[in-house]
Image (cartoon, rainbow, N blue to C red; front, side, top):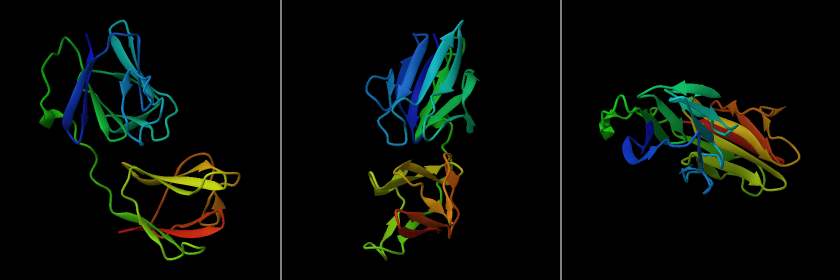
Length: 199
């Protein structure tokens, strides 16, 4: 029976056998594999077991699903493949390859990103600087304008979350897709000017 080993920072947390045709992965408590982490969507991905073969499908998650370090919408999985969901790694083991995994055998997570911050340039909070330490940092006020900055393997991504007007990046309204931020980028959210800095 195929199973997945779940780990964070290279340390195994649990093993889950894949006994159903569909095994859901996400932050909500009704998932088969619950990962309580803000970088993981409520319904993030699903593992499908069909004819002894295993595949993973991303369910339109905010931060994406990665197989062996590459973003995927849907991908078959083979023994030893690693799936990254937020900071967590799921590694597939199959019965015909029952070698147990040691924590050191887990695929390493991407190298840490440089330190990043957002400096507020205008409004009541002018001069305030927020260091982006979490996987997901939200900016703005609900109902007025909310954006998120998410740490990903390729860098820091800006996305529109809520509000009637999209945030502006260097004077241009943000579209539906997240955008990679570069040091010195100017952000405007609900009439508040900010700048993104990498160190």
